[in-house]
Image 1 (spheres, rainbow, N blue to C red):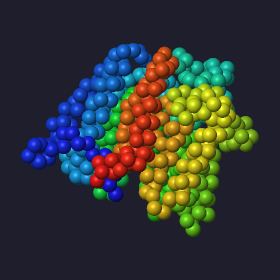
Image 2: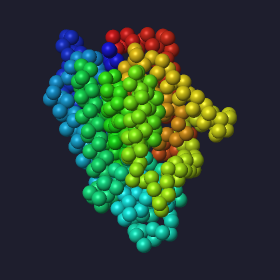
Image 3: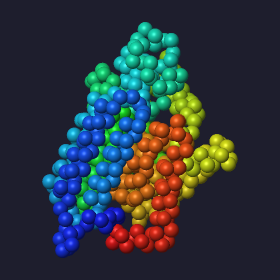
Image 4: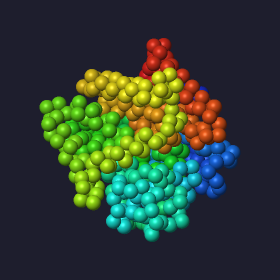
Length: 443
């Protein structure tokens, strides 16, 4: 199946001989690395210097993406693929020592791991509880949401516990997430090779400044859930039980992945009883370490902690949800979001026999980003791995424009720069003439 956007510029020399991409990729890799080195030395959470560096890295990335995609279905050489992966490793090692400034989620991960190491259930008490005063440290002042108990999934909390037992430092905890990120890159390359698509397209994720900065720099958990979700989509066609285990594990790492569970169930066919059984038994086993607090069954308290966090988090950088909330209020906007997701999931299930599971997952997750009440930059990492398989211009643009969200508290008007081009490109793709043009471009 042809699904590549072909970029016409830099495609061939005047004589018709394909131009070598080596010099371009090497130069762009060097420029990206220079940008990351400067990012690692940038003090403070904001400022013109940071914005310029992020914009420069994003520009170099888009040119590199165009360089890879312009070749259509021509297979890439192993040397180029190895260079792309090696450069991706170097990028992440460059930002690994960086102390997160734009997001403090890493301190929350560290806190949850620390209190579990000391024998506490993270779902029982909020970090601000006086119970923790004897073990509180100066660095714990940066823990976010101190009035809320743990709200991440049980598997994520187990990862925090294991990571803290392995390395005590806050920044060292990023090693786990960077490791998951590199495994994700490897799985993306495997998936491209299995479909006989150019493996060079792994660059769309591996070199993404968003992935490098948010995982190696800010220490976000997204690659762990994205890796499990990708494995679930891989296994859907032939191993629905393994898909159920992987999808449930992804949902218990980050809750967003639960939107893929109906897709797994819809493709189970006659094996749906065993698939449902795995969807129930496996999450129960992963949740077991947290199911009892003070000798009482704690599932209700865990669900209450997650619900309290969802209610306390106000809308941020939203598009469809923000417009619907302005018209119908927050409850009405929630109903609209749920209805949209139900429609997209229903469409994916109706076409489950003909559609590629990766394509169905791509459509579901892209719709989720459009209707979410909160769209932080690192949320785009839910979808970006699948952009490797479906490199559509709207989402490539959004993966570099979503940086603007960091400036919204001071400059809210900049949100138009994020979403107007995104929706414009989406409408152009959906419009019959635009669809015909796009098909000719990828033929």
